[in-house]
Length: 253
Image 1 (cartoon, rainbow, N blue to C red):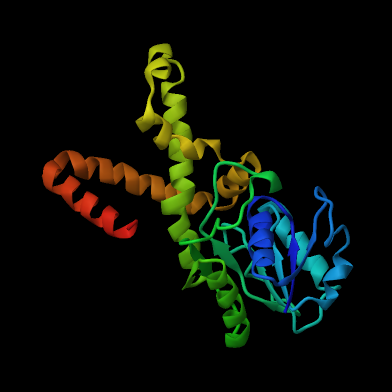
Image 2 (cartoon, rainbow, N blue to C red):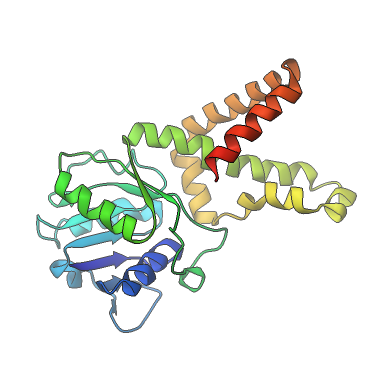
C-alpha cells in the first residue's frame, strides 16, 4: 500500500513518522519541509492508494478540489480537520471519507511531531458515502497508529467537538483574559491555572478557523456551561462533585 500525506505539521508529520515506522511506502507533499520522499507537487500522489490531507482548515477545501484533477477514482482520501460538516457537502470523484484524529498538543509544526501521538486517542470517521472497504482501510491504518476508531455523522461530530474541544479552548482564553489585569494573580498562578489555560496556547490559525466555522455550536456549548454553573450552585455540591469525579475517572482510565 502506498500512502501520500499533504502537509507535514504536527498531525501530518506524526502520521508520516508513524506510518514510516510501520514500514509503509509513504510519500509527502509539503511546502515547508524537504527530504527524501517529500515533494512539492500533488502529481506525485497519482500512484497512492490512500491520501491524508493534513492542511489548515481554511486551505482544505481548495486542496480537495485540486486533488479532483490529480487522483484516480479508486484512491481513498481523508482529511484531519477538526470540523467535518464543511468538508462533507460536496461529492468527490475519489473515495473521500472525512476524519478527525482526537490528538494533538499546544505546539505546531513538523519539528514537534512524533511517533505515538495517536496512541490511545480516538480517531473519528464520518463517512458520507457507502464505502465499507475504504472505511476499513482507514480504520485499520488508525489502529496501526494506536488509535481507536469512532464512527459518527458530520453533524454529530461538530456538535460534540464544540463541547469538548472548541468551547474549552475559548474558555481557556477567557480565563487568561480575566486574570490578565491582576498582577498578583499572574505572579502566584500555579499548576491549576497552568492546566486550565493550556488550550489558550492553541495554534492561532487553527483557533480562528474553529471559532469562525463552528460558532453556533460553540455558542450553544458556552450556554450549556453557563447553565451547568447555575446547576452547581443549586444542587447538592458534594454529591455532584463525586459524580463528576467518578465519570471523569472512567473516561480517562
